[in-house]
Length: 245
Ligand SMILES: [Zn+2]
Ligand SMILES: [Zn+2]
Image (cartoon, rainbow, N blue to C red):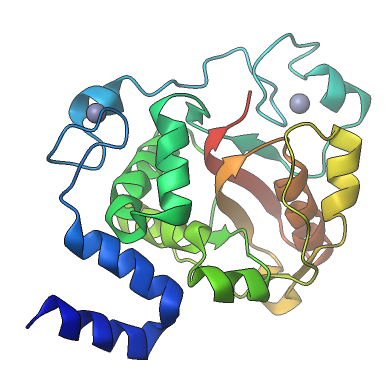
């Protein structure tokens, strides 16, 4: 089958955004997003050198730094509703390219490797979970991108750890402007407040592990947790691949 006919078929079935990523998957040889070496999207050397989040970090929001009684100054002042947010990696170096790649280019090719990284973290961290729930995109954004990278990550992770994925338990009901790094914690919280709605029949009595690609200040997982807990979730933890520090 020619590439043109594969692309034509893809275009018919999945839309322009999927076509773009399928084109990338098909036409470009695998190169490491960290060092450009050929062979894998993340080579062994760059994988081993990914910058990890090391303790001490806040027991609630997961932010590394100075703590008071296991909490960062912000959570000390105003504790979060979410039970905790964790991330294996700092949003630096190759992981920044990986997260960017997941959003914009090597989506399907990267997701399985990243799912393995999250699975390893889950296996070593005792996070309570009955179900993985991806942080939803607003339907309009998902349509224009063609997929939700958090859902892809959750699916790949769920396959490895043997947890179900539920992308119906939580919906984004309000589009929010993308979070600028410069805006304050307060602005970010206001930005995403009431942006999510949870389905009681799917959330009630469940221990939910939210999955997202990156955590900037924790405002998004916190807003998700508020909605899920109002709908009766037993616990809500957030897990992201990387976090801004
Ligand atoms: Zn590399
Ligand atoms: Zn904190």
